[in-house]
Length: 124
Length: 395
Image (cartoon, rainbow over all chains, first blue to last red; front, side, top):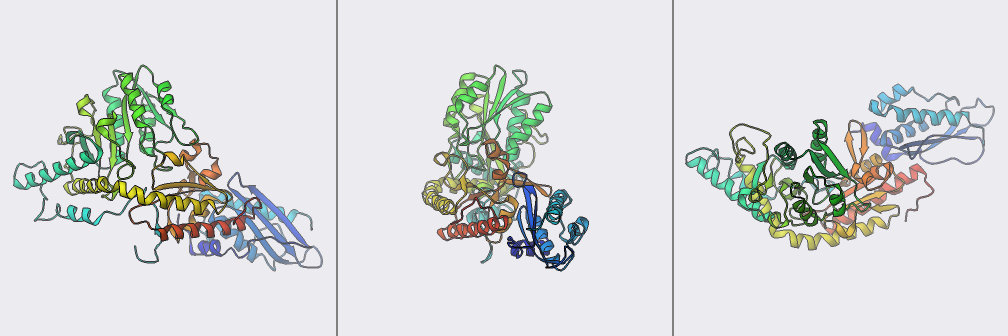
């Protein structure tokens, strides 16, 4: 399997991998390990009203290098953005940015579901 | 490869050509060597013919066959096809039933599936969790019209050795069933005497034994009257079983490689078996490592391990800068397909996918083993951390 430079770099570093604790954290997950892809996002919102921007994001993922790379990018790119159920980029744009094969589109949809679940979850 | 290149631990996929073999092959290519067409009736042809027959004798000697038993092919895949279609078509009046195993190479399974499409019946035996086919399973599967049993000697993914002698006795007692053995992984690792074993047909490959790619052979027990219908027609070479100009340099390379392999297998076994066990101990200590196949029934150079808590494609990608190994999944399109061999042994989809096959060879060293353990350890720690799996303990 050939990976783009961006995919390889993000997969290799996965700097945003991990979890967040404490107040103002929303957590959401989708997929399953048995199914081959599982993603979880922890999203910490800035203080203030519910519309406050995202302060930090961490992810956990069981999946192929594309899933890990995209999750890492989403976690970083979301900081400072409003807490909305939409990813920073559309699935199609992410697919192109990371040169994700079309056969893996379903895995990106799982990642999107995890983000939506996080945004829909109550504050901790 | 240059220094800094990943450590090569994929000798079951292919091996580098031995320098002595390459030199011998080169002699058959140029004007001052045996470049003639071995079928030509002049001195140049005769010189090439002699080289081809010398190579045939070398291959035969290495596997305990008679020289006339050896039919050159382009590799083990063609040999498997020639054996399976050749027997099925020739013996069709006697029956249309075939017995094989689910863990065979695709070069056996796909011809069998094609024969099913053409009306043959095929029984696919499921091995035990160890990868071993009990000869009693063969006995139970044989039917009155079984014309072919095809069982590999050494499994290419897990290295498990089947009891070919027992299976051969069953086929002989049956009377009609011919035994074909895919022995592509055997030469130089686990000797199998073709003549003494009662095997009817045996597929061989050069490039698994430090010979060139693109050449193999099918041993056919002509002395026992085994007949085949050829797959290709043309010049009638190889006693009409495989038409086409024999590639002198290729078969000479195979002959030289097999002679060297036969001479060195005992020493290689003695050297590689402890290295393989050192590798296993190192991987086992990482936690969540499951050995695939019966250790006591496997060739000394091969180790297949499933790793708990990591995704297969990511595992392979993570170790790729450091070691060259095979994974338990095949890349068909962009999405990997997990190993049907490991699933036949009862491994679930995830464990079948997250397996690595380490195969050692002539140039493997203790340093290579240390590098492999370190590479896998680093990958497991990182990927399990990313997955956040609390169930996995990493030492």
